[in-house]
Image (cartoon, rainbow, N blue to C red):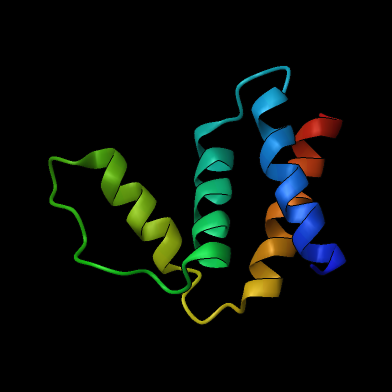
Length: 86
């Protein structure tokens, strides 16, 4: 396991222990970078207009299409560290 992979997995646990709930934009960033790192490019159809949350998640993930796994992991780690410092 690479150092990046180990730190990514550690951050997955640490994000659950944040002292306050992140903003919706921060949550979308965490979601999108996590999905890009673990699944790859967005899959499936874009949710309909009535599924506002699902549509926002899909759109955030879609913006990262083409981002490689290591970059997505590092972005996720950086966001978790930023939230911990706040």
